[in-house]
Length: 73
Ligand SMILES: [Zn+2]
Image (cartoon, rainbow, N blue to C red; front, side, top):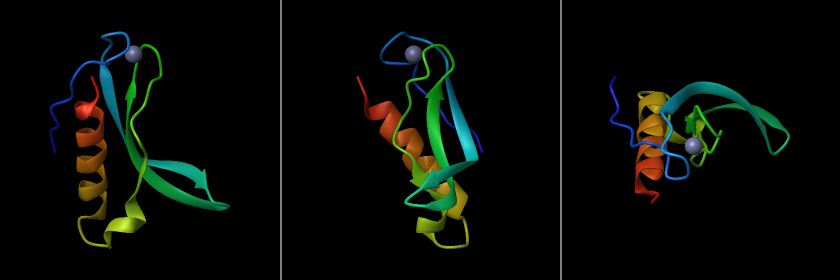
């Protein structure tokens, strides 16, 4: 799936979507999607894949991560 990512609001760098990234949240290992700047490491909010059900869960979390990134100015 292709996402249209805006450049980083802080440095104008290229943005990158992290999919199924393993993270340690609230004492549990979970998988999250978020957008990260390849230049300065700024990032969007993290969206837990498990929060969006089993089917299409990663797609939904990825879409929200992209939206939250693109809303920043
Ligand atoms: Zn940046």
